Amino acid sequence: MSIFYSKNFYQRDYQRTSRSARVVVPILIDAFKGGLQSVIDIGCGRGVWLDEFKKLGIGAVKGRDGPWVQSANPLIKGGEFQATDLSLPYAEPDKYDLAMTLEVAEHIDEVNADNFVDSLAKLSDTIMFSAAIEGQGGQHHVNERPLGYWIVKFATHGFRPLDPIRPRVWQNAEVCWWYRQNIVIFCREGSQMEARWQELHSTAPHIFDLAHPVGFQQKAALANWFSPEEYIGLWVARLKRKLFSRPAGAILVQPETLKA
Image: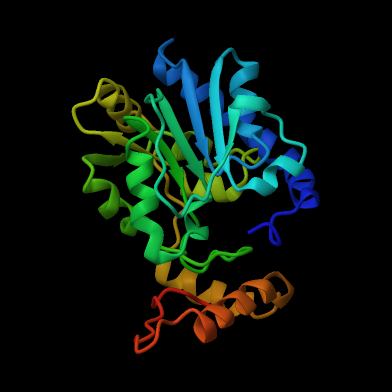
């Protein structure tokens, strides 16, 4: 994905991401009531979110992402970053208090989505997760899915979805709209933090301003045709896979949600 996420991209993205992190990270720290000591970010980019955790006193952080991050002026250094192919299984020697992956899963091909969730589930009992929904659009979005798709995958590992973050930032313009739309907490059933996340979920304000996903998808699909420059690389990649990646005698099946 290095052709889609260059050094210039990360530099442009810093301001809006750091503003979002400054709002959301204190909510997470408060939720743990002093029990948050370690965080891992899967698909960390330059490490903007981890940098905010460090500023607020969380000493043990780690990020995993592609090797191109190392040339993008990362904010995390040395052993805090590990270059990783996120589509393949990976492991950590110890569990973290919090694992997070924000707007990353849509970049993982559908055939590797189970690997992605399997690896996440081993990292922590609490996972902050967001992924682009169908029709959202973006660079190299090869697996945009409704949240229910990911809920099913996490459920096989004993995780339940809770919604303590979005209602608290829904109207906050400092937070990027895609985080306000997509962030949920996956909590392992029976874990130490389950009751706390349930408490925050049950006391969160209601969100009333929701659009039906079918209508959103239809509108977004139409709009995306008018901004093709963002999708040319993705179209080329899909065409190459279609022409050159099919094993002899195999039947090519395109995931129904992949939209041009």
